[in-house]
Image (tube, rainbow, N blue to C red; front, side):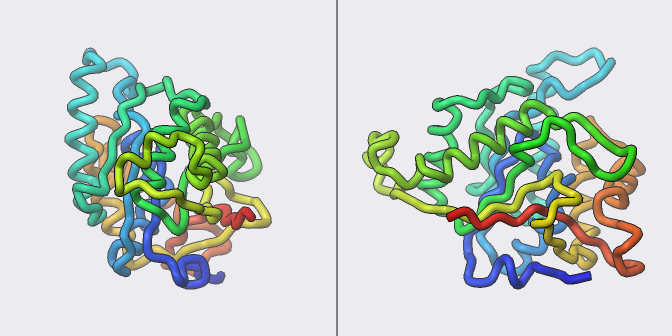
Length: 248
């Protein structure tokens, strides 16, 4: 079982994580983000929404839940070591992330400002995610559209200066090219890579558990085991899996 962390992140400094909701970062790549931060990478985490519709039967308004989820997420990002300036909320509306030019422009601004060497985001292709035989789930529309917008923003919109030229009135924003991606929610793809997060599993669990309105500690531990342990993994080791793509 190969740990591909050094191979993938060699010669890189800035990693941009683009996720649909609070808690997605922790679920899909919390251990990797913690490892990156502890390894002195500059990591920015962008949330497309506050996840303010994410309740089942509780009697709470969207505005109340938005405040709860923002408070929880700020604690979680602190646990992962994300700087306040790199903890970004776009507030596009839970369940309302559209695949369109407006959303692309918002992400282009983030890319042109932060200038990432690699982008981590969700699965842009599959309507149904296949984890294993008999284990499947729907790829939430926000997840699908987040990833598609992220890929489009990275190429060609962030690079070509005639897209959104008003950006360049801000001297912090520059044309930028990013062609490397790590996509979550791929489990059997030939491009999959694994990162050993065993030494960072406590940070992942602690950060995920900050989302108290969504999960119990037992839920968090079960989710961590589900996503980071496998029958083929070395005993006692935890790995996070991604599809790694270099797009020319």
